Length: 162
Ligand SMILES: [Cu+2]
Image 1 (tube, rainbow, N blue to C red):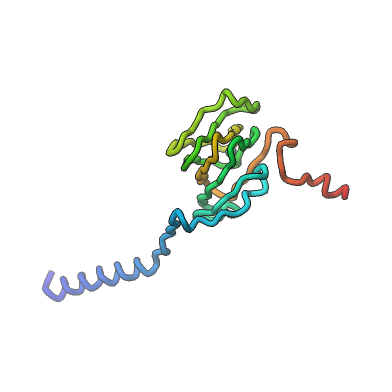
Image 2 (image 1 turned 90 degrees about the vertical axis):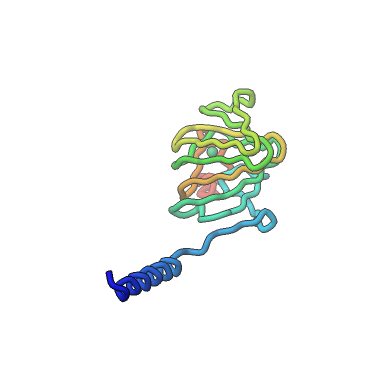
């Protein structure tokens, strides 16, 4: 390759790098003091708070949220349409498998602990102390309770009756 050829190749590389950078979406940065807490998704029992870190749990695609749970908070046996990855940020999340809630048969996930509950697998949790857990997975996020009576969302039938 002649000198001109090398220069052209160099210019093309630079151009390529510049256009790749332009197409790149901006990174998401959330500092600890800029986390915005709001109400938790309607499918969770009252008393918890949630913060969307990235994505949108209501839509198709990858999302990351954090949930703040008060001491003793429980989510009765349920399952999700997609895998749910749980990272405990602080506190302790006790996690159990199966259709029956049994406080003593849970695995305690301490801060920095991580677990994945596979899609459709029934599980349940309770929080020991104020607990913050990061949940990431593929949206849309859904939750189905084994016992419909545990579902805090208003029932369709009840709505029709009123
Ligand atoms: Cu779950």
